[in-house]
Structure formats: C-alpha cells, structure tokens
Image (cartoon, rainbow, N blue to C red; front, side, top):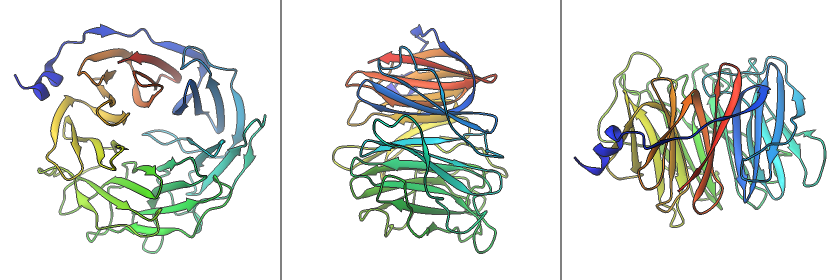
Length: 344
C-alpha cells in the first residue's frame, strides 16, 4: 500500500475529545498569533468575537462586534477574521450582496466599522468572501461577484491601512463559459507582495479548481491555471472550495475536493489523493502542514506525519497552527461551536 493510499484507509489512531464553547453560534473563523487565538462567529444577525491566550484551551467571554441585518451564513459563509499590524479585521456579507468590515485596534476594547469592500452595490449575492493579510497593514479580499453581466466572477480588493479603506475592485477572473462555480468559496493567501487565489471554475461542464497569483500585491494577476490532471464533470455545485498555504520559498500547497476524494498538490505538480471526504482546509507549511476535513458527517484532521484523528460530528472545519508542533481547529454542529487542539 502506498503512503497516499494509507492516508485513505489508515484507521483512526486516536480520538480527540471535543469541547463546547457553551454558547449558541455557527460559522467560526479563526486566526493564531503565537499563543493567542482570535475567533469570529455568528448568532443570527450578530457577529461575535472571543479569544484564547493559551492556544485554545479556554476562551474569553464573547463580545458583540456588530449586528448586520440579513447576515449571510451557511455553506462556508459567515464573518471572516484576519490580523494585520496589530489590528483585527472582520469582513462579513449580507444577503443583499454587500461586504462590510469591522476593525479592532490594538488594545482597544470595542470594534469600529471599517469601509465597505465592494465598490458596486449588491454584487456579492452569494456572500462568499475570503480574507488574507500580512504584518505590514496589507489585507486582501476576494469574493464571487455579479457586476456587469449578473454572472459570478472572481473579484478582489486590497487595503493598505488594515481594513479601514479599500481599493477599487478588480475583476481577477471571468469564465469564458459565462460563470465560475456559483456556490464554492474562493480561497486567498498572502505573503508580502505575493497574493494567491484559488477558486472553483466551471468550464465545459467541469467543476475544477484553478489558481492565479499576483507578485505585486494584487494589482496584476497571471493567467489562471487548472489544478490536477483529471477533471470533474458535474451538473451542479459541490459547495466546496478547498484551501491554500504559501511556503517560505513561495511554492504553494493546495487541498481540494474532486468527487468523493480530497486531493493535495503543490501548484504545478501532480495531485495525490489523501482522504475520502469534503470541506477540506490546510494550515502550516514547509512540510509541517495539518489538514482538516469532513467525511460522512465527522470531522477529521491529518497531522504532518500522516496520523489521522477524529473529533466527532460536524461540518466546515477551520484550522490554524499555533506553534512549530501544535494546531487548533474548530467546526460547527447543531448550532454550537466545537474545537480541538493537536500536537504534531
């Protein structure tokens, strides 16, 4: 049995007992800064925030960030959080198709409203938005956008002041067949001036993942390239976007779903199947990556050594590394948020 095959059929070696944050909530988004973990999530139309200062062993009392009427949730939608230059930034979309931001300055108690990201009103109807940031105050947002022809395309915008204001929006990719996949969340990663975007396309009936990157902070992007050697012909939307990370040498690691399997590859190289499942995410780089995913209604994580652990029932996991050998991930289940910590 090959190493890749062993990932698929390897028995679960240990089960992590999950912990409830003990509040009603859904759509968690997490980032890590050393021992600190920051989490945004939703309850109805309320955007909430809490943090941990011990790598996820315990969390603070939640605070209200804002109430956004008709806040869009479900299928990977919900408030997204990043950090840049000591500030926390949350972006969230409403069902009308607008994306709003909220900012918490370093050492501030409360949150303030930032700029609206989309510069054409009510074009982000699918409400799929992703954020990435660096430590220089730069933030990049990418989303599905209906502007112009009412067909979904990949659009992005940058902020140079940690989310306070946003650039003129840029159409990054428009499918020659009319629309990209309508219900799959795009992913974005950022490292200095390198901005990498992964999205599910829709060409000739195929729902394949594509990658495009910018070397000038999101001003210009190269031609989008398909990931994987095989295509997935599907008359429907899998609602599954995948994840990306940038390594120290600027190579790009990806995870994504095709049919009932999860694949991983370095951009430009052949894909390898690593598990059966969906809703996969990746965190960590340079050979120390953790991958979380869902299979048959249960949440799993693959450690860098290939060990697979189960954490109970749930959907749409989010994952961050908290140290050289540790990671933290969270997911939702029946209106509650659960989380687990991992050691390499």
